[in-house]
Image: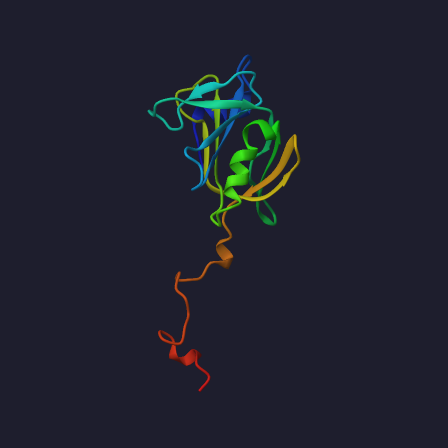
Length: 167
């Protein structure tokens, strides 16, 4: 996670006339290109996904965002409430259910004082749970479950680990 000075100032001082634009990028192997959402803005916006990158179009959709964080119990997941789901996102989510790989999620926020780069960037998130209706989705997004991954990313079998055989 990276945060710029302009974003820290916007959080701390909340200067008059300055707003924070939150964006969500969804990507999956079944998507032709990532789905880019600008949260709670009235019109589509063109913003660069990284410093120095060419601007891309972010589609304006009513989305409530609770960014991921950390509390006493460890990392807390990101939560999204997405309105008007059937018009834009439902075809993508339906296509993604056919594949076993997760939907990757990137959160970016921009301050209107500096739209040349994201003020905050959170990568490496995956869509975990989605509850869908015709008009809304409630989505939980979190970091991958590192505790359940094999270490050292090897499969323990009787060929490489003969002590596992019960002979």
